[in-house]
Image (cartoon, rainbow, N blue to C red; front, side, top):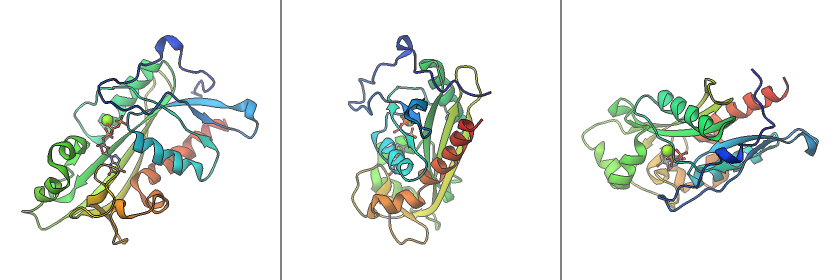
Amino acid sequence: MRPTWTSHPHPEHAPRARSNKGRRAGNYVLHLRQQSPIMVQKLVFVTGNANKLKEVRQILADGQPIELNAIDLDLPEIQGTTQEVAIEKCKRAAEVIGGPCITEDTALCFEALNGLPGPYIKFFLRELGHDGLNRMLAGFPSKAAWALCTFAYCAGPGSAPVLFEGRTDGRIVPARGQGKFGWDPVFEAEDTGKTYAEMEPEQKNKLSHRYRAVDKLRTYLLSLEGQ
Ligand SMILES: O=c1[nH]c(=O)c2ncn([C@@H]3O[C@H](COP(=O)(O)OP(=O)(O)OP(=O)(O)O)[C@@H](O)[C@H]3O)c2[nH]1
Ligand SMILES: [Mg+2]
C-alpha cells in the first residue's frame, strides 16, 4: 500500500525529546522531494544519535534529492537478531508518531564470537571502551569483524516494516584516528588500511555499512514516489 507521505506526525503524537540522554538530534522531518517544491512529502527519521543523522544527511546529499531530518525518541530495543531488533523498534516508532517513519540500527559483529556483540555493541562499547573491545578478542586468532547497518521503513501503525541492510567487512584493531563517533577508531575497513576514524567523512560515506544501507533505502523510497 502506498504510504500517506503527505501527513506530518499529528501534534498530539509529537514525541517529547529524550531528557535522560542530554542530547537531541532535533525535531525534523524527512522530505522526499520531487522537482516542484509543492510536491514536498514527509517521512520521520526516528533516532537519538546525532552522528548517525549527520552521516545519513551527508550520504543523502549526494544523489537524488532527499531532505532529511529526525525526531529523537526513547524507543525500547528488544533482544534478538539485528532484524528482530530493527523491526520492533520501527513498528513502535510508527505507532508513537502515528505515521510513516524510518529507524536505523547498527551492529558491530566479531567473527570469533559468531557475530556478537552485534546489536548490543552500544553497551559493550560503553562498558569496555576501545581497549576492552580489543581485549575481548585477545584469545582468538581472528580479529575479523563486520559493521552492519539496518534501516527499517514502516508505512504507519500496523504496517510491517521493510528492512534495508548494509554490511562492511573489516577487523578490530587498537584505536587509531579521531574518536568522534563510537567504535570508529577500532574498526579497520577491509582493503583500506584505515580505521573509519582515520578516514575523511567523504571516504567513510562511500564504503560504510551505513552508505550501503542508505543506498538501498533511497532506491526504495524513490520507487514509492513513482507509484
Ligand atoms: O563508530 C561508530 N561508527 C558508526 O558508523 C556507528 N554507527 C552506530 N554506532 C554506534 O553503535 C551503537 C549502535 O546502537 P544503536 O543502533 O541502537 O544506536 P543509538 O542507540 O545510538 O541510536 P538510535 O537507536 O536512537 O538510532 C551506538 O553506540 C552507536 O553510537 C557507530 N559507531
Ligand atoms: Mg539505539
